[in-house]
Amino acid sequence: MEVTPLSSPSPIHGLHLRHKEARFLAVASTLYFDGIPFILQLRTHRGTTTYKHPILRTSHNAPQCSLRAISKKHENVAWLSVSPKLHVQNKFPRDVVVRSELTAAGSAGDGYFLPELKVESKVRGVCFYVVTAFCAIFLFMMMLVGHPSVLLFDRYRRKFHHFIAKVWATLTVAPFYKIKFEGLENLPPPDTPAVYVSNHQSFLDIYTLLTLGRSFKFISKTGIFLFPIIGWAMFLLGIIPLKRMDSRSQLDCLKRCMDLIKKGASVFFFPEGTRSKDGRLGTFKKGAFSVAAKTNAPVVPITLIGTGQIMPAGKEGIVNIGSVKVVIHKPIVGKDPDMLCKEARKTIASVLTQS
Image (cartoon, rainbow, N blue to C red):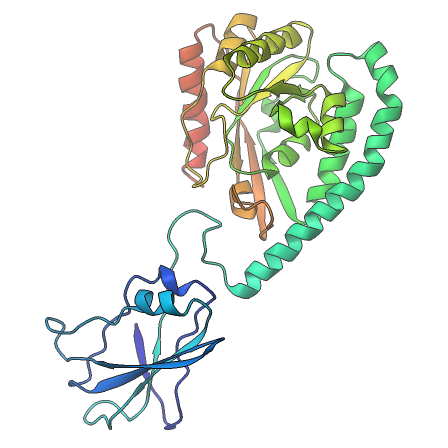
């Protein structure tokens, strides 16, 4: 809390609060002006309310003025002002401005963006989906035309389809964020089957990984395949469907992954199973590493940095300004799923914690 004297005796408009953001303030700081009572004025879209609150000098006896209680009554906060009721003598002039800064704590995407920035993020989010839909319509037609040839000559890798997917992802993300790749030399040769694993922070992870241009098969919920254009394109790509909480579907999924690797294709797993809402790396499931151990395929760990800040999990309607870093680590080979799991998680976490 900062107190700044003013030369003019005009009413003070000192503390600006965003809609609904006042409720995140636990308690306003206490002012000490020799027992002088102050007037707390809160203007909302419904009108103006004035609160009179005596502020005592000593912090031991000073009651704290709670903005949380006020915000419950007036959620649409336009501005709040603090001004003295009586003439203040000694150190301070008659009028003061109380300025407070709302400091956010927690993961990217929590409610600490300014209103202007949030509106901009929503606009960028709408533009993002317009761009991706526009590109998908035309590129899907190319994919559909080439699908018979793909089934005849490249049924398992489907390189032509993955090239189109790379073009689609690149055209979609290019206007909104830049991607920096590190460790590209660690990627196995394109025709070498491998198990790729990565941390999962955002809906943008798929777009980012597709720009690598590798022919790996993702695993996706069965419901996504029903989406027009996008779901159909996933079917043509050979994406592996999975019913969550269905043990039989999980077993079939792992069997299909092993079959694809044996036939020369690569698979991609998010071992956490779901997107992280706070950016922290979750517990890894061992399915991907069991597939790698049984097929002798190398495990390629990848660390994604920044996607969760641009489009946080649960807030897929916004696109914030930012950049993304993709770190490809050296492949891990082994026949012990537990060892592969621990080593891959340790490798990804070592870079994620430094970001």
